[in-house]
Image (cartoon, rainbow, N blue to C red; front, side, top):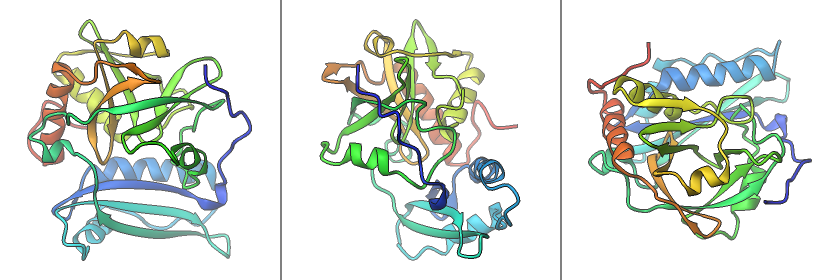
Length: 265
């Protein structure tokens, strides 16, 4: 069991952020990302004047990029300004990594190596701009390694930049939204797609042994989509399989704006 870093808390003065994938100048899932950002701002900075952020504004930010890349990541940070108001900064840059959209809807063969990292209470339900805890953990790790956040009760929560899914007996399982993990936009989309496809889904507590004995283990994020997990603390994991491949194909269609098995209502 990893040592629990019980005293770390994010610095709220640095604000919260969202990262959206942009394909050919079109933001992916902008409504869901903006809704999550607005929800965090209302909870964390009540009474503060909040900036106006809407889908047309995000469209303009993505369409006005000068990077020349067809696949980009748009980062929107909202933080308290000098006068106490909430100020917005944005950055659009070429996206790195293997995307489901660039791989024919298939799961990339490059599997992530997960390394357990204890944190009491997890990273929480907000996407904090203060990433010091995970950045320190990530420093010095190989490019394919990612910290896996584990609470002091042994519950597997999330990876530093993605939500965690397992497949067991054809059922899709992922940790519950209990305030300890980020309510991922791609997590929500994958659960909706799975339900529409008739796949059983269940949100419940997961342990390290649940990952080690699963039929499939994969991660979901708003930039990389679905990616397999190949090991946990040096022990092999099964990575992606037929269910992850099926979900990735549907996710690719959703991101491309095509008709899919599921859509947000």
